[in-house]
Length: 397
Ligand SMILES: NC(=O)c1ccc[n+]([C@@H]2O[C@H](COP(=O)([O-])OP(=O)(O)OC[C@H]3O[C@@H](n4cnc5c(N)ncnc54)[C@H](OP(=O)(O)O)[C@@H]3O)[C@@H](O)[C@H]2O)c1
Image 1 (cartoon, protein in one colour):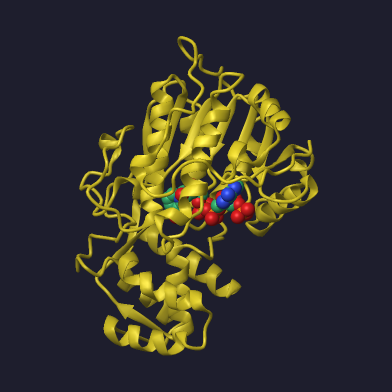
Image 2: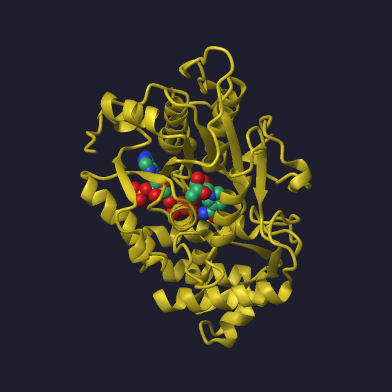
């Protein structure tokens, strides 16, 4: 299938979350029927990304359905290469997957997902399950820069979901949508599907994830069988250690190794390995009771930043652990000779490390909360994961 991308701009206002529009959804006549389980024809967004590649791998390995990936690119071959490279670079590719993935060239930030009417109608009538994983993930950009992909893109995809064949819609959000500071009880008992507007957000990304959820909620109220998954910080794979080089934990480790020092801060990091997140989304999405439910996916293993810095020291990646103010001074000196993004990374570190609270049980936006996830994990497991991640990140540095 070859699909041309549209160049028109999105119609939604980019200014305010309150501008979120829901009127463009197709109003189903009467009850909107839910797709039958198991899924037969699946559309995945974000398959070229970190979580998306893992979920695509699990779908290819665990289901017999047809799988289509919505990918940005100029040609189908280009899109296929992108998805395949994402799986290969994360050590997830197997030759048995060859020929099992259909590529749909599209762009969430464009009206009708950047597709022709023919392509849109084809998908609307073919697909019975959507896993919406794609997003512009960036903690530094303002809401208006993320609105097109994260908010309008979700709206366009919901429109697709509610056109043609009945579908189930699995929306990957984030605990960031709960606002900041995170409510005390981000646990399975507080997995509210409908979120009221939090009193504050730390960044435009969190706000865009909240706004997208409002749209999913509105579609659910109109009958769409939608479920929401809210992971915390998604960390590297629990077996291979393959990590997203752009996530806040990886950037922090990279900054420390480049400076040769780690800051002394009373924080801890909660690990939620990407393969756990993917597996949980898949398992939960296959339950008949998942529509209308939200699931928090936050791993049980957390480790103090001090222990992680000690691992860096013992492995020879840094020379010392110093007070935060000293570390920051050194960091800005090093940043002068680095790309702009390095300075930007340093600027968000206090937020990542939650320097405001001085509380070791708090882990910034990343995890001071009990887990919905695999049980039986411990500090030992967290140490193992930290070692695995440090080894992987230093091998690709
Ligand atoms: N990473 C975390 O710690 C974390 C935590 C909680 C929730 N989440 C959520 O989990 C999901 C996946 O995150 P991730 O870390 O895997 O992100 P990622 O690695 O940055 O991947 C993002 C994916 O979205 C695609 N995408 C971005 N803009 C698009 C557009 N306009 N049209 C079509 N596709 C577009 C990217 O495609 P290209 O290859 O074309 O760029 C890529 O495949 C996101 O919804 C995120 O909000 C992530």
